Image (tube, rainbow, N blue to C red; front, top):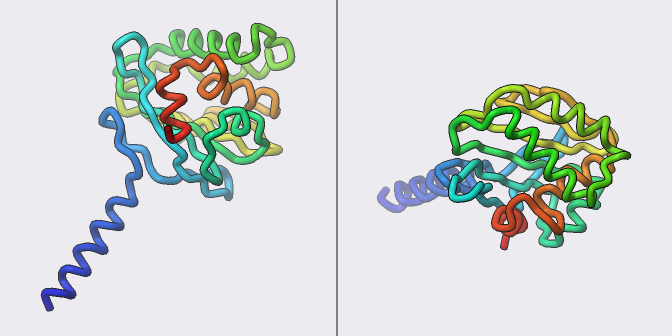
Length: 187
């Protein structure tokens, strides 16, 4: 009887520990996300910091584990980034300013071929991000980048070139946060 109870307790603990793959900065990132019909697994996670402020916990979700940032950026396969906000009160303007700076760095300053996509993407970020808000940036080949805020689809931006520039904001040669990039790549 005691052996059965121990086995049941261990099974419950294992299932519970699988439900949350990573807790970082007080934010809980799940071990998987769905990109359409494709199950994505948490590749790695880290904190986005601005100066000394923890802004959000970010997780990279892929179909298979990867450590090469360029291969992830170039891949035309389902993937996602989850942003779980820790800081309370990031204005839409600050988010858009950050996106624009990131796109500029990711493209070497030449955004001409993705300008319409950037404008559409930026138009989704009108509300202030509050503590515990969750934003999912999900890429599905043939459809584009879907932006979910607090579980609701805000819109989709088509194009692999746009996706590459967007994911390069986190994973490119000049990432927004080197520590976050390292964490997302499981390092």
